[in-house]
Length: 458
Image (cartoon, rainbow, N blue to C red; front, side, top):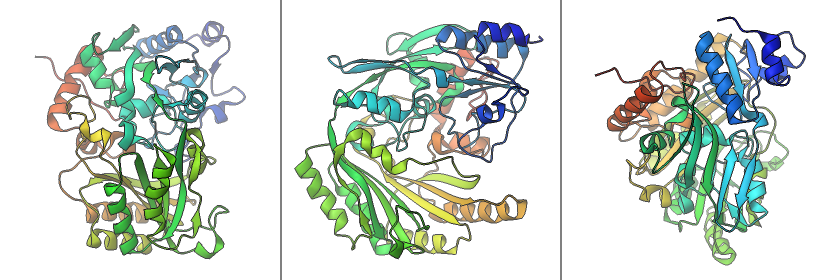
């Protein structure tokens, strides 16, 4: 099937960008600069009917379809070489019902945009830790952020969704309507269609005690930090970024070049109790900087705001059962051994509300895991030899930390092969997802993702 570009432009009121158009290079860019892909078309729909048109076009033309919400895919799935990019950024409708504490949100919204709008009503839904991430991909994969211990994953607050399937049909899915598809899209990623809207539950949350705390990083401090985060009441969610401090303006000069814990803390509860909880972290070591304070919840995203993502990054993620003394020593040793300009080990303490949801209630099945680690090396200069060094470092680091059963959070997966995708889903979950895939996308049209192929017939 040939595509008539003039007719397509007319149908989409000009919201179609081709390689010869001004602005093409900007429009094809994604968060991670290493993905330099050149799609045949970039189309920006404004509603579900237009999304269905693009899905049908991709199906009938045979062109690869990449769906972009915020463009933060670690594997580069928001971009395509020679295919169609369905760019949802024009779909930012948000209908908040403060009395019912629910919201219908289109999936071109970012976490920051949604959170700011909900915060005006003293309400919140938990997303990730970065405001510029699109809510579409984040939600489909699970959603682990500042409220994970208090209110669970993002998917735990999804009440319904609207989804364009491979046949171009718009479905409303919830616990009563297409329940198996509703189960699958809560953690199964973009395998089953294009989510155009989600209906979320909102929680009362006016202010938090939160922000960034910079501590010197020793093995003892790292071990104690994780222990305090696990022992804290569920109102506290904590993220520890352990790294050699780069010469950034927000990091005091006396810390530059030293191993630090850049901690992000968020207490979603009564302020006085939050101050007591945070004091335990302040007492682990003399802080280099302390930016933790009572604030409106949307302001928590200011600590992860920034420009474009890294040009080159090697990354791995895994779940840990514990961070004891030897594990903390390994983290310190491996970070100091890296030759990358920036090397990071991020630790997120889980549990709480997330862990109380049954493992088979959603396609995110890692409910019992205690800690999630994300390891990364970032560099600027291209080159196969340099990339090989950093890939070997992060692979060895992950192997040195590995504990217990394999597992990975699907939204933290790069382009790491099918075996790693299987680690995101235990066997019963994988089989159930493959059966849903066979029913709703038997030809695997939606394959530009951490792909779950359709189960064979029979």
